[in-house]
Image (cartoon, rainbow, N blue to C red; front, side, top):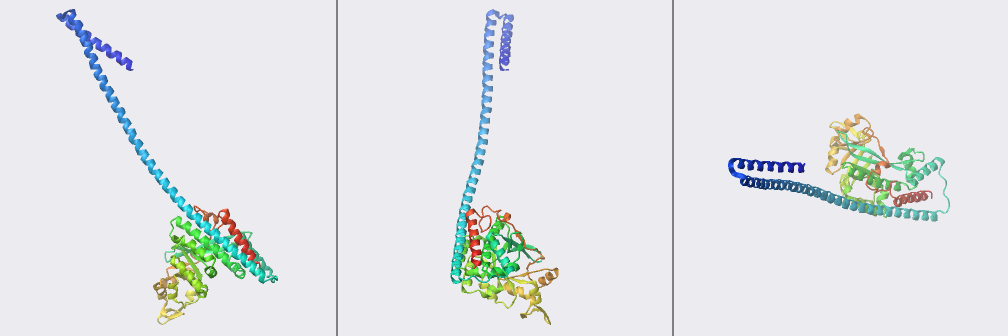
Length: 432
């Protein structure tokens, strides 16, 4: 196309020069003037053509230069975006590395704890064997079978975590959960504490069950925190665990490394166990309180309570069964009072506990009628089958964390082996 354009322009210039030359020749200029006009016209046309071509070329170069600059700007913008993404990725990798190191430290701590508990059970086996050379009398068949079931459940780690909601009244919005441990036999049947607790206590297995429950509570609290759910968990802790001079220091180290869980993990004791605690247990409770962890008292049957002592012990929740609480109500001329506190109006009982930083929880709520009475007593928290039964939190849920951090079946092989070792040693100790 360019060659055709050049030929056409050249022909145009030649025609123009010939026309000028012919005009001069016919007007009397002669041949000399005509030839001069022809040569001059061609030169002028060529000069003009050169200027036009140069202008067009410069304009084309200018457009190409602008296109290059625009492409350069686009490339710089993409490089800046890429650099920002690389910086974010580097920060995320550094964060993950730090988190992995923290989790690895926890796993090492937990594995050491399991080994320590196993060694103590070995010592117990040796001591009992030496002190009791004769085989003791065999338990009744049913008790023996139940004991074997409990031992097998520990050995196979068939201990499940169940959660029951604790709701705010009257909205019935879940604000806490209470955790329970349930054992499963080989056929998958769930054993309730009323079935196995007596045997477990007699054989010294309750501490092992409680300890495993404690670590599973830590794990589920981590899971809830990852989901940014502002929900706490009541986790039962036994007096024997608080008094264990081998278990408790390592458990305290674990909680010291996880002080961010203090607002979501509440340790729970029965009223009888709380009243029987000694100086060691009270001191260890105070250590947990210094880390920011709180306590709850359940299984309350006696309302003659020293609330100042509860405040000193960092007890923030008091759980009273709805039947127990409503049975305490007595109608007098001045209105409803509590049988244990005849000088105090019943509706002022919750106000009294709040003065000491203790919140009442009405547990074992089974009917709507009980809700009406509980609200009249200004109690703000409720728990019971009316609001939801305990539901199992399966291992699949517990493993939905970035890395396992508790004595659960989803631990790495080393720690999982430690759990099995602990269970086997516990079973062996219980046979003596």
